[in-house]
Length: 282
Image 1 (cartoon, rainbow, N blue to C red):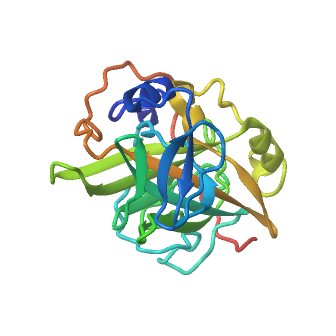
Image 2 (image 1 turned 45 degrees about the horizontal axis):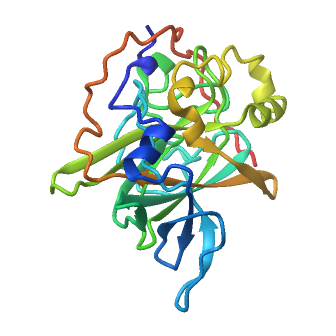
């Protein structure tokens, strides 16, 4: 079993999350500068003091496996494309990832400031930094964290990830904060891309040099659990892409982060072994 298939925490389906909040069939709309979210039947929400600023699926997002490649590098930075060990920049198409971290409680969401948000993922050729199995020990590319601002927002500049054997394309995310019981609270999951988008950018350089991926969203064992709740919608931004995504956390759920999920895992293939590239690119 590939260690990137080992379960971490519980997986909450969309139906379960909506049922837990008593919001089945309801739309949810973010209003106001603080990012509070309320249930709606579909019409715009307005008031004398706030106006609609966006739409969010305000449910507790599902946890997913951490995998073997998380390294707590302590890199507080927004642009994670560079390697601080030598100043080089990884190749790949630029992706701006805007995340909003929200606390889900009582059928509403509020911005969660002060949360530590880590992301990490492989490069365009399927290589993770600072991993012995990837021959990249000492490298720190495509890793970093931000602290959510008063609106619960963080922003990362990175590249679109490549693929490696046994997994669909994904970005790992870990959020650390304090639960409602005063104890440390850690949420770990993965972000995904649509099939159409993956096929389009994998056909471009430098991604096309790796050949045809062996795993799609439909055949990935983790995407099938709840990946549709963690699916990114991208749009063009200059020569790259940008995406916005909200992550709702139920800080009263003390089981989050506990390694208590049974399951046999599944085939994942060996870890990638190619040498990482570090040539600047858009």
